[in-house]
Length: 74
Image (cartoon, rainbow, N blue to C red; front, side, top):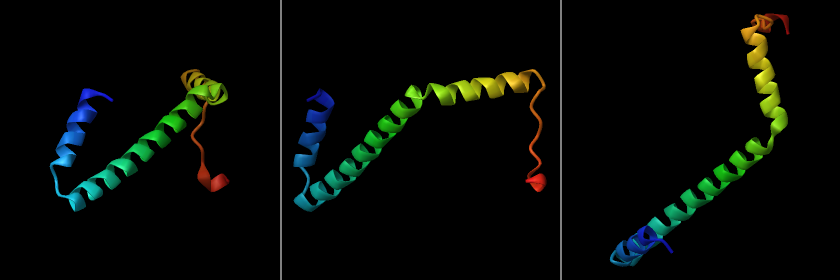
């Protein structure tokens, strides 16, 4: 456990129990969101296909091969 977590736990312990429960629930929610973000980051970093498409698109734009999409023609 890091020093920062130990400090946070000590602060939480000094608060009334209902406040502790509310804060812990909020921390749990935030930790799950952070976990989800890490998973998405991993998926996209492993996705070389997506990176290759983005590079191709940038190259085509730079070469003047890209055209503005006309949504009325779809």
